[in-house]
Image (tube, rainbow, N blue to C red):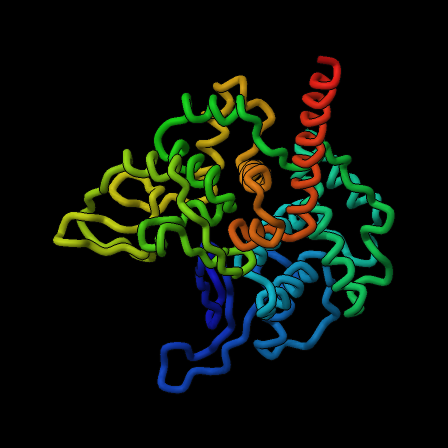
Length: 354
């Protein structure tokens, strides 16, 4: 759509932003003022009219405005990682499609429930959305955008235990049948326990003294993961990639004009291989492998935790390698310890009977 004079559009990281700045690109530009993100909303035109000097009229505030204010506030938070901010933005985009037209004072928990019911077949997605809306509700109550909690008594979907660690059979099937970049991603996640957002960033440039030194994207925590012999053997089959030039945004360079050093996961011609593409390709390949039914890529973090526990690593040692919170490590370790104790009791019983 054509924008009024003095309004300009900026695209950054795939998102649109609109600003009012009369006299832009002239010798004496006016003050730059951010406009609401939707140029088709009444809030956009009301604010623009006010900036243009038109009489101020009552503005009908919608949830879309509240969403915008929340995201603006979130982007100023230095204690929230970039990955978490992007996750919240994705969740808000979903909520905006269902609630953006409503006035904040009319939104009730029943409206949130109806929105969540659309995700009954993907309960994890629904629960993530509910978590975001709960944070929004608390933020809005504190700042006077709501006069009541919009998520009060809204229950999450029942969890079946979350991302379950992979079984030995599942790991064997993956090693036999996964291919291409998905196979690489499996080995990297299986033997480092890192999130998918960090797996896609791993490369030779992160190797330090026989392991990967990683600053995790979500938590900004630095961890060091040893490269196990099994992972080293698989990495040795990947060889080196040849590229024609430096790739923007990559930690990449050339040695003697031949060796490429950068993320192990990439598309043809060195194009960036992101988390979304990994998720998509993993789903495609895993659907053709019966043993992987119900397995999630994130579950490999739990697999690594259980394995380290079985090797005798302490909770603190596991945290240093995997970068997982202590409560989650304890949860996985308790599960592993119960299995180990159960097997030990069976062995002891057989010895007694014999």
